[in-house]
Image 1 (spheres, rainbow, N blue to C red):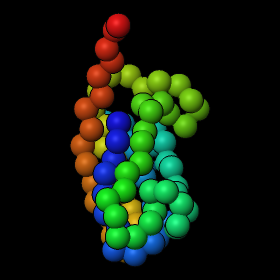
Image 2 (image 1 turned 120 degrees about the vertical axis):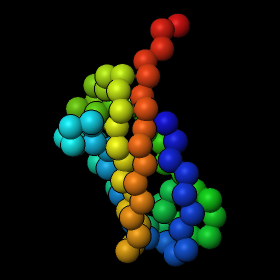
Image 3 (image 1 turned 45 degrees about the vertical axis):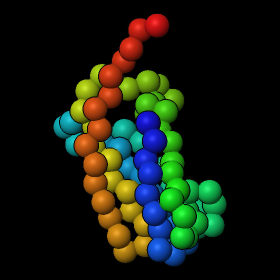
Image 4 (image 1 turned 180 degrees about the horizontal axis):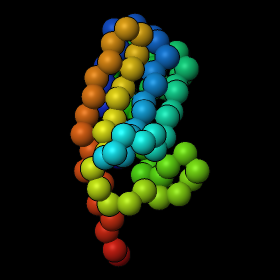
Length: 84
């Protein structure tokens, strides 16, 4: 899953994903200036659908919060498992 956003100024970016009951699934921080935390361009960060222990999450609804500088946005995610 890809999170796309635009920054007005380089700033650390933190992406936090919670499950449907509000438990932390994963938190990823991108340092200012690293790809995904640079200013002026559309940038993105990727979540591979795994939790902070490296295990795949279950099918369901998740909530993501992206924070950069003094800005914070939220998003609802629907994760589905597909079989090849």
